[in-house]
Amino acid sequence: MVVCIAWYYISSYICSMKIENAKIQMRKGVLELCILSIIAEKEAYPSDIIERLCEANMNVVQGTIYPLLMRLKNAGILNYTWKESRSGPPRKYYHLTDTGELFLGELSETWHTLVHAVNESTKNYNKG
Image (cartoon, rainbow, N blue to C red):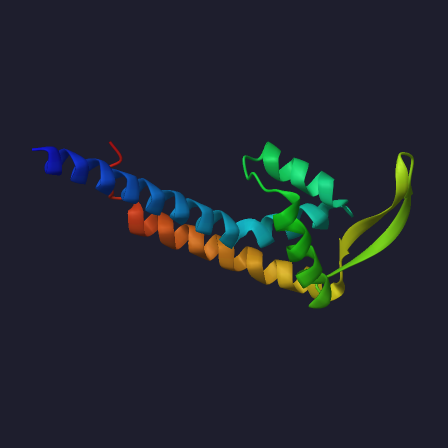
């Protein structure tokens, strides 16, 4: 009996860890699209991007966003300009390059196709 109870708790814990990992991976998969969409509206400072993502319930931290911004810049998708700040040193404001505009268009199209496919695939799933 004790072994069964212990197994239940262990398997429940493992299952919840797998679910959390799956949720994290799903968020990471769309993070690039979300960041580029925010920047496409107007050039953006990283903390403003983080704030917008958090408002949309996509909680990210600086340690996640800065490497992604640098990778996108190195790929020619983003660029930045330095702007003076009222409260400290100059800041980098990111904007899309022409390549970035095309890239975002392709990502957005792919996202809408994927959403449709997932909705179609899961429409008969009993949610409750």
